[in-house]
Image 1 (cartoon, helix red, strand yellow):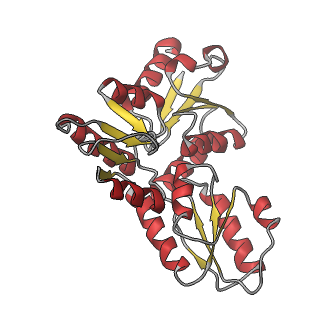
Image 2: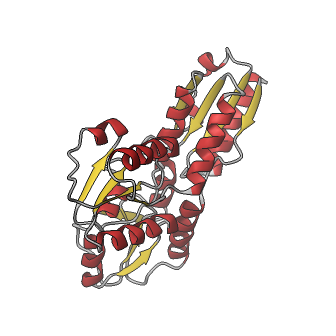
Image 3: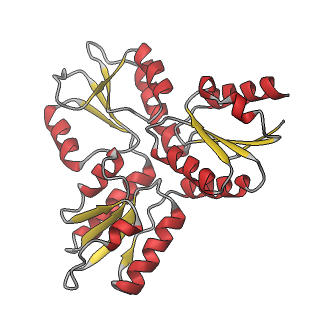
Length: 284
């Protein structure tokens, strides 16, 4: 068996930065206070378990917080309303929002201030999306071009388009072309999809043409990981999304001579290595 590991597999810059800020807090914990992350710092349960063992708590903002507590904003960002609430409560707030998400928030806010309606391509229940739309009082969230085409577009309303930073770029391009041709050829298009996301998706498409099967590693709640798995599956090869080496379907994978391995942006290197070693030890 030949195993080909994607060059882009593993932590992206935004995740790495968020965990670095959390590590700094763990190394220098507050006196008479606790460390909280506002929701999961990233979408990887194994990483979250490690931090929980180090005394890191999660909060959604509804529980009592002490004046000496530290609250770290996760990589996905939060709504502007929730951020204001925390600032008013007097806790120490550490912003670990991914710079790409922060940039998207700023760009969306600028367009919304021009009295425009946001059309956002993303998962409506995802925390990043909830944060993004909080910067645009008028917004419509859609998860596919088909869903967008069913929306009533007001010809008297000015719109602009943006996307969740981890969305599929090819789908976004189709949506962009549809809106420019069918709605408004002068519509502002905000290219908010992260370059790291684009590179990972393109590498999966390329790698899927070179292997017989693809293993995608990462949290099941990670949107960018799920999209990598979807791209691999759409290529027509055998593709499986696993969180850990224990989930590998070894009997199914035994049929293939060339296997590709990639991982989502919130998947730590040690999990990728465990999966790679399990595959090598089993089939080589």
